[in-house]
Image (cartoon, rainbow, N blue to C red):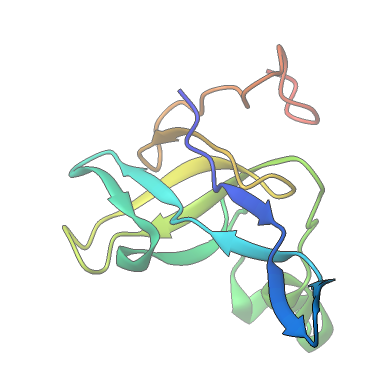
Length: 135
């Protein structure tokens, strides 16, 4: 089951009376953002304000003593940032305080399956084979 950030677009009409005639002026549409709900594997479904984003999941931590400064900077700051499904690390700071991974669509903000670190990674929703992993 995917939990989705819902964006609703509504038109706002302002009615004003000028003289004997009614004038209707349209404003630009505005967005109403609903809360993003994230499934913590330990506590269940909670709203997004209880979590902090960690980073892209599955990125190996290199030994900083063996890397040149430019390589270390690349590790710290450069990520793939793809459009579509991405495995991410999150921490439930306002709840259990534990780290976990989940799939999130970076375009639609749909949330896919959550899983614990160092366990078998589930496939991204809507795919049969995870690209680039050979799994």
